[in-house]
Image 1 (cartoon, helix red, strand yellow):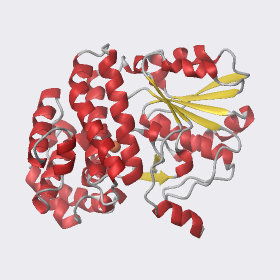
Image 2 (cartoon, protein in one colour; image 1 turned 120 degrees about the horizontal axis):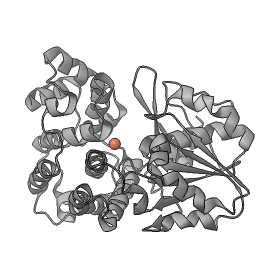
Image 3 (tube, helix red, strand yellow; image 1 turned 180 degrees about the horizontal axis):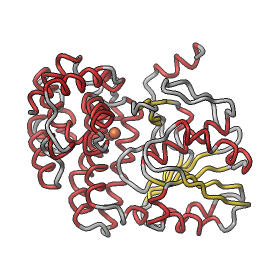
Image 4 (cartoon, rainbow, N blue to C red; image 1 turned 90 degrees about the vertical axis):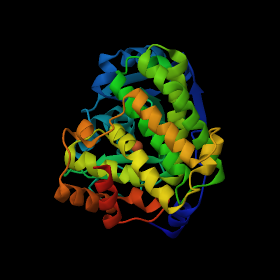
Amino acid sequence: MDLRAMRLQMLKRVLCPPEVCVGKGSVERLACLEPARVLVVTGGSARRNGAIERVTAQLKDATAHEVMELPSGEPRATAIAAARETVAAFAPEWIVALGGGAVLDAAKFVWAQLEYPDLVLSGKAAAIGPLRRKARLIAVPTTSGSGSEASQAAVLAADDGTKVPYVSPHWVPDIAILDPVLTVSLPREITVATGFDALTHAVESAVSSLGNPFLRVLAATAVGLVLRHLPVAAENPQDLTARSGMLEAAFLAGLCQSMASTGAAHALSHATSKLHGAPHGAATGFYLLPTMRWNRRKNAAVYDELAAGCGLASGAALEAALLDFGVRVGLPQKFADMVGRVPDTAERQILAETAAKDICLRTNACRLGAPELAQLLAEIG
Ligand SMILES: [Fe+2]
């Protein structure tokens, strides 16, 4: 990486998609594109729930459009490489990423590979240079969690299951479309888990060592939106106001995470997903409160500003509200609920050591390493 790129990466910056379309029917924005070659990158769930039809119905005036369905799960280097020739042959001018966070991330890698045909993705994060020489990106999320539609980040799963975060300011989408109609078929369990992922992005980035005043305002708004809309979205999946509120929350939290990364809950979640197969959203939500308790023990006022932004008296009140909220919406409260059993002491040690190597831990509100993480895990029981 050259010095100019390094300097840019170290700057505190507010990066945001230049166009964000919000609300029921916003998918119609796709019908207003100038005639162009459009590649829809998506996953199996978008086919099953009809999202692909809703999107392709808007592309009648495109010069040409194709749908590329990627394997389910986190993006893998082999799957991205397998798409190389097909994507190059179609030569899209727009890439529409349609799906959950993993699909949106995968589309970013497909895009980078189109622009840099010699790009080799591996288990080690590398710089992604300027894009948009061949195509531009539209992100259309069908879940409300990862915030990839707002973000400069994408996660690649290495062959051993390690999540490798790549970051490039060029990956911030040109257009984000937040249409709640595309999320109404999301099952309750995934609605709750992805909602807690968004909540955790907001809470962790608000107290991140890379935080800034802009994101703290956005984070408080995102937390308020989740508290208000997630219970309704979970109980009444067709409620478009609640679904819209959750898309807005995930987008804002994605902006925050994109600016300041996250913290210990994400580091532990990544380790638990790798070692015990826990879903990302449920695991981040599970670890949110124990890590908040730990951070508050080190700095009693650490969440006070975020709490005030949410209309609560203190960080302690925010913690209590989130505990009550998690129980109410059915978030796993015990290890056994999340991974089927309680890890023994040796497994907890491995979890702690794995999490200690995760890059998300570097921006946690207080410094902690493997010994502290092991103690934190022991306290969860
Ligand atoms: Fe996350």
